[in-house]
Image 1 (cartoon, rainbow, N blue to C red):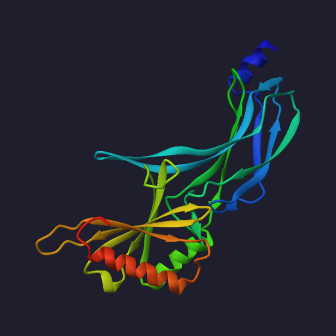
Image 2: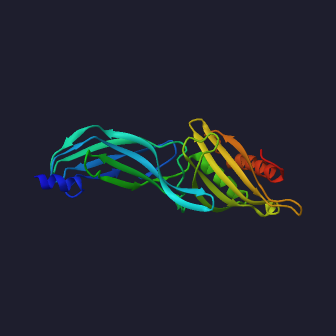
Length: 259
């Protein structure tokens, strides 16, 4: 028995966990629901708690170096202290709230490369190796976010890519933010190199952060200029949103400084 206890602490014969999601698809401000299935190992083990959290792969820049790291955001305890006997089975249902500013991973069935969100399940076993499980989560845009993306496409902006960067913007709730990058339409190619869009969503609407990489002139250097457009969750008229975006980007492309 002493040997089994030692091996369980090292992870061999330990309790195991498997999380089954009701659906892997959600939205910012939505929920992820499922059931945590826990199976006892070869010996009885005390459990401090079982919790679930979301994880994102985030780009980090420092000086000339760049790397990716896993950042945990949003954690919920789904079960408190208890004891699981050898071979015993327990099923714990849960409902996990998704933060409003969670990055998007897919748009209309199109996966955004370089953006990864997962639901991590951890079981804290004092003095032992904590079993865990990781399930991929697909985060689709809110209706107003989809409207913005459709409007930009209708204006001739081309999707270039998306990433999640470590850091904070004014109004951001998470220790990172997502940037969706677009190439300009032909009508703006003399003034704009690139448009970067960040969504800062909340229960009240979405702050659309626009950053324009301006082209330099004959006697001036290019520079980034930024602005913001606030939309409510009811703003899903593509034509109306396109008009606001077009005016905002053209204004930024013509300015000489930060908004």
